[in-house]
Image (cartoon, rainbow, N blue to C red; front, side, top):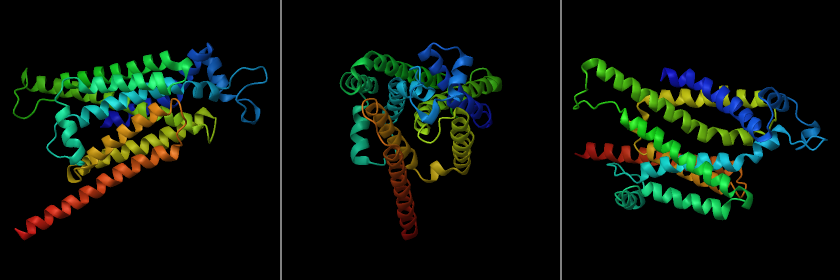
Length: 300
């Protein structure tokens, strides 16, 4: 948790909100890192998309990179959603939907099959003709990244109480440390999948990369991470049991929106409202469930 709020914040602010956009401009334009930074800090007059000599602005280069960013992030989030929803769980929120999906999930590697099919549909139908190969490669990298990070996390899982940790206490400490590290890595990739699309959207407010990094990073990322740690320590997920389900359904919706946005712009308002509605519904369902169980206990 400390790493998540310290090193993780540095990665979120300077890595994903500042350095990574500059890296994209560096690669896309062929400029050096200093020239890319200069381009970011000195946009064309009147917010124009191009300079008088025809060179694209920093904002234009970042926006043009949206298809590959959305494909990578969309496929990573989609794999995360499918992994959750296709797994058999004791508690189900949308039981009429989650139960048959969990049964279907018994088919080995079904999540990969579904993801590949959706990636093919996205690349061949939704993506612009000149972005088909780019979307395919970026989407495949998103899937590979999820499989690798998730696999490493499961490989170094923390032993359960009934398991015998190899190597005694030191073995348990090492296993816990490795599991914590890969969980941290997993969360950082997840944050990257969520955050960079917000960097593109922030250009509607300002083209200053420093303001974007500070606004989305220090204010946004710090608040979200702090509230996340607070909720974990308060045991909110165990009290409101459907919140985890609602969050994953919101992730699945965001993944589909990202993939769809490769070909058609989706207003940020819709993206935000979908997540709020799903998580809010899950929260409300959790409260109803808790009250129902409390009444049942009183009647007994």
